[in-house]
Length: 127
Image (cartoon, rainbow, N blue to C red; front, side, top):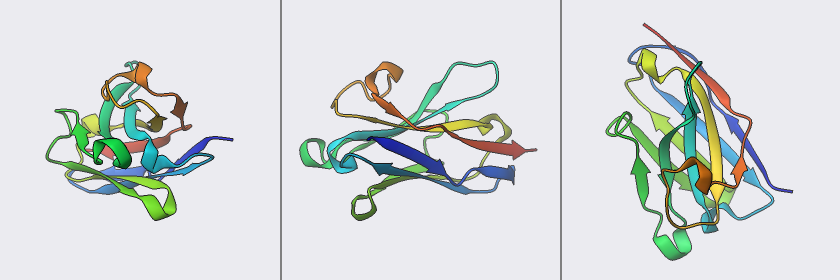
């Protein structure tokens, strides 16, 4: 049974940092594209970051412009876990953050690419 469980969200102030984690089970995350999306109230779910599979795509990272330079996505293959380090957080980063996984090796930015989803973790950034 495939499962993605996010953790690490919380209430922080603008300028603070957070590290989100996504624990995967039921599949080997290193052979999948792993990604983070977010959804703010009243808005559509949007791409945040992705890391390609290690075996065929070398684990390249991709970022949305809104978080590029402030965020780092990384894998811990031994723990079947993916992390999203976010620095210099802004109020507009407030959202529920979702972990996603896909066996595909293209269209990293697209919501429809991803087969598996976690339930999300809330990030709230106060000004």
